[in-house]
Image (cartoon, rainbow, N blue to C red):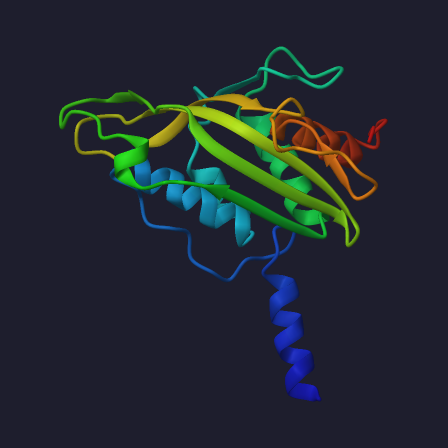
Length: 197
């Protein structure tokens, strides 16, 4: 029983809001690897790695279906605060996204800027065991690196997910919305402001 308690405590301490024991992911030298690390960090969850995948100076995000009150400027700080709140507070999180190089695309060897094709993304966030936010649609990522041999980081996200996607059906347990709306909900909860849905 004592051994089980130690294992459980270790698992709790590794979550986003507490000290993390896992080392951060190695730098990604292709856009596909950066997005693969993004998916791994989201599903782990691993906030420390998640933060390293974005440019603090340049990152911006926009949504095709923004929720009410969503700020016109969504930068690195908002992204990190919202994602940390989401990963800390959600019952369970699943991010599905194809990250194979053939789908993401490969920039020229000397390129320092790259924009992916729109990628099919599904995000499921269980607020509680029987209630799930569901976002699906296309997300486009802009990536950059400091020079031709540096690691790629995300500098832009265009969120095309939303309730209008064909296979998203609302019911008592599923609330269809955009990925941005899910982040906005959890950021408002963290701030103690009105969190709809």
